[in-house]
Length: 436
Image: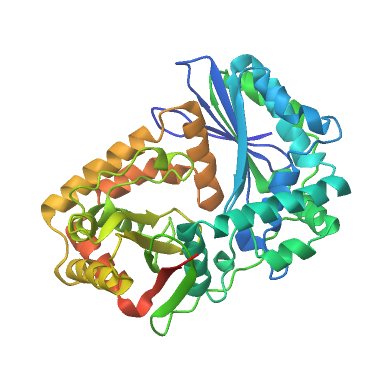
């Protein structure tokens, strides 16, 4: 086992790499007798080719269907018998599995993740039944206007990068996917040298590492060379998409090119979003549970206080490659989408041309720093943030972010607004509701 020195931080992160390439991050937290285990894989919808979209998400589903040593009807019960919780998710850059339970369940949680990494079965009957489940999930999402609009805007904003694929996939691909497609994807990416195991909670590091080595040490590494993503070309002008479906409300979405998490402009964009729509932090797992403070944000006052929109929101997520910064608004009854778009564009252009104020910068920084603290309010959240950032850059990035936000200047925010919020670089989406 090769070891890396722990970080020089008040909350010490112990980082170790097993001989087979499995990266292990551990943070002790003894306030409660709980342990959270997350296993992260560097595979998401960006890694899918046309014709196989949705395979990463489907594989995630299959990996709850039993393994060589865990019958399918006992997978959920292993953690639940300790009073614990379990879950998983797939997004554009990663796939993750989690369980949180009392400290005496640690070995069982590691056992489940070791089985998931190397021993899943992919029974043809389970593949067939899960196809129905996932297609139903896709169709349910298409019945959610804001979710459907987000999918269409993203697919319109990107031409070549894998970020253009919806995580759930496109329907024709889900209908044609085979068991061999799924199992081949699983065997390619679910290897120790493509994974990060994160433990946070009430344990002793030396004992936890001994248990990890016993469960994962004998697993063989694999060839995990990811394809080189083509660089997304600059748009040559504004792009538009209109979705006309039965619905009761109209939705507007404005999407702009956003920096990757490692880019110097990323913290300035976080501050800019906080000024426009309210500070939201960077935890995509639990961050949305606490509403953003919006009352003084530019777009809230321009759209909601004026009666043009019933809700407004901004979305800027940490990603490995440049993704999107999106502003969305729900039109009030009787408000035409053209009027709503014009008002939103005017408010954004005002920031782009005139910049934000020193008071707005100070408030945004304070709110963002507070959100970062709230996002580490449990061992589950602590472990999530370490693993999530490790899949897109480095776990150290989440610890460096408060300092990066604190260092953001007025000039940096105004420069980001001037360069990124231009109409020539945006994608506009309308959901135009039709009578049922």
